[in-house]
Length: 64
Image (tube, rainbow, N blue to C red):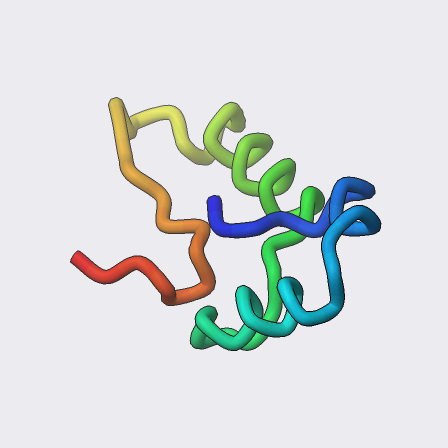
């Protein structure tokens, strides 16, 4: 995933955070809850017929 909001962000400068956030089209960082929700869905019965997938957790920053 792109930068994810964690306690580690407390060690980053506001300037660094603003710069990195400005590069993400959605204008925010990923949350640990979003990562956990995606992982729970992949492990759920609703996802049982899929054998693989690539998930883009970059807020639109990564383009292929």
